[in-house]
Image (cartoon, rainbow, N blue to C red; front, side, top):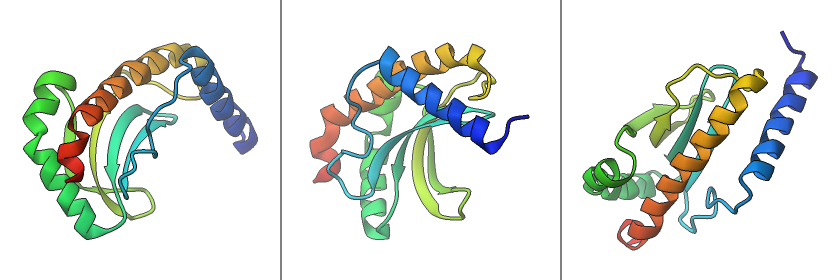
Length: 142
């Protein structure tokens, strides 16, 4: 069991280490599309990369419909195991739409022995998410 402070320091150490191991500028929140963002998630039970649609419901619906039209391309050419959830409930009870890819292995941010596997997963799969976005951004934002 870790104290809150120990957990915070481990999280900070992981993200610092990830940034040093894979030094590049990720798109993440800088998509230039309101409510459309990429996210890394790593906690004590799992890791995933995600494309989240939040905020304005009209925009969320618009983007979701465009992403559904591109679903076969995303699955066939980029992320074959991506999961589409039109209604995903966050821990804070906020509903968003999410496309994500979970790491299947059991991992924990508190276990440094799993960090390398998570970093490599993040690097490979977020790169593919971003490649998809860059190629189809014009279709999504129209």
